[in-house]
Image (cartoon, rainbow, N blue to C red; front, top):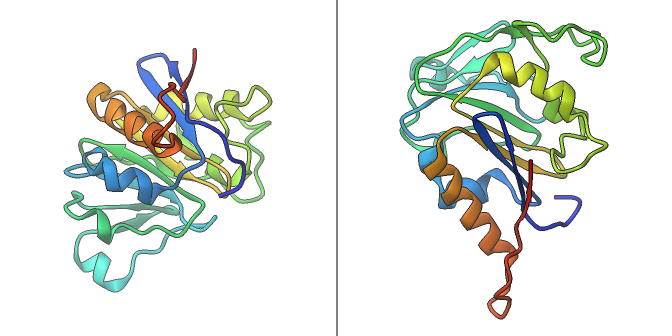
Length: 192
């Protein structure tokens, strides 16, 4: 990943969020429960649409309007991870509508239900940075309202969740990865 920084955490309404220099594999190693037994809407994989394989389609994956939807997640190792990934996590199957046209611009669009932008691909989804695109992202996020959100760009891992226990597990694990054995200080920064 790019920029190196300590895990930063904050709050947005009912959601807690974190940004870190880690990757999805780190998160799933320590907190697989964030996706196990849930359903994913994959809005980006390797900066583009995710097209489930024939095997995945026969196992229950679907592709609708540029968004790939998983069956109930039973194995984190089977989930597609290609970098520049964006997952919306739900307790029940969901339908987000469709991906916005590639030529449309989220910075002038209404960001209304049914038209989804993959904000992970804008290379600036650092919720911890005041100059980021966070205000646009949150406007879309607020109508989608997943249980959790997981995105990995070339620079940041972003995790957002309403599940306090799973979020605390993820925050603790990723913060511990930042700490050396001799560092007893708290490496987490909290923002509101």
